[in-house]
Picture 1 (cartoon, rainbow, N blue to C red):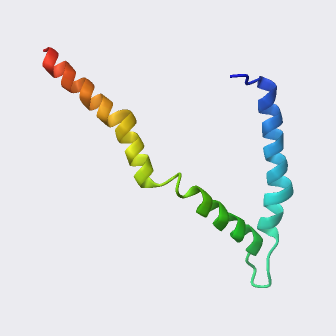
Picture 2 (cartoon, rainbow, N blue to C red; picture 1 turned 90 degrees about the horizontal axis):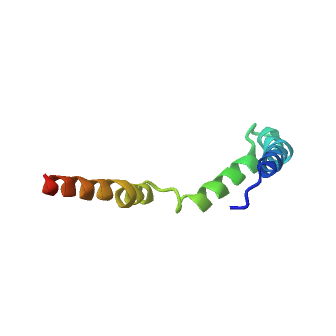
Length: 82
C-alpha cells in the first residue's frame, strides 16, 4: 500500500510533537478554579466528533455483519452437510 517503514518513525515523531507541544500544555494550563478549561473543551469537541463513529450500536451491527451472522451461516451449512 505504499507504506514505508520510515513513515512510522516520522508519524510517531509528529504524534509526540503534538502531544508535547499542544496537548500537554493544555492539560496543565489551569484556570483560577484549578480546571484545565482549554483541555476540557478540546476533549468535549473530540468526543462529539467521534461519537457517531464509535457507538455501541455501530459496534454491535458491525460484529453481527462481520462475525456472528457469517459464523452462524457456516455452522448451519456444516449441520446440513452432516
